[in-house]
Length: 266
Image 1 (cartoon, rainbow, N blue to C red):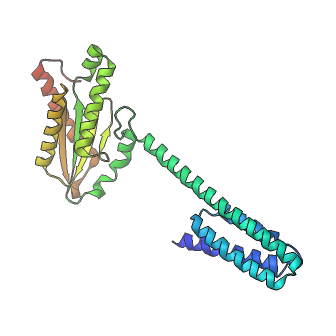
Image 2: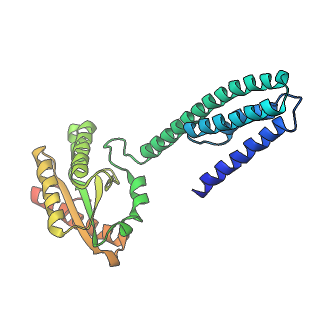
């Protein structure tokens, strides 16, 4: 707000100075300095177009009024015509500069979004994951839960059915994770590993969500291993929380491979 006010005050001072120079100090000459100001302000300051246009209309009106009072008809007719032309040009420049700024902002945000999205699954990637970790303790009021999920059998599927089959499994599991834990709190952090967070929940809720993902994955003949860990708000060690969830996941994964008679997980 302070910066905005300073911009308005500064542009007002510039306009009044150039009006003064173009009228009181140049009674027998045309006012080139004020005309330049009509084009300069939209280029110097990115302000909403309607605000710039209001300013241009107001200061142009003041300028024309003073020209008619202080200058001879031969001079002020030229200044009035020039002022109207440059006022229109300044308005168009304002629209162009504002549109360009918005477009650049959209591109910047899009590039940032793309840098934080996993290209295969559409989940947020490890870059986004690491950036968000420090924010989770401040988001919760009661507790924080970390869920660590692994898609079982990716290596075997890639060898037997090809990488396209493995990719299909990763995409499906990612969709289930996002559907269950939300886009903002779901991450793909490795080849077949996913991490999600739940704020202010309970063990039964998380267990039911994991059961849902497991059942939905099995409907597509996929299998996952998942582990989770809770920490109270006042006792959150985010790295330890993730490590505990990962250890539970690996114990589940090991038991899975024992059960199906396959090789142990690495």
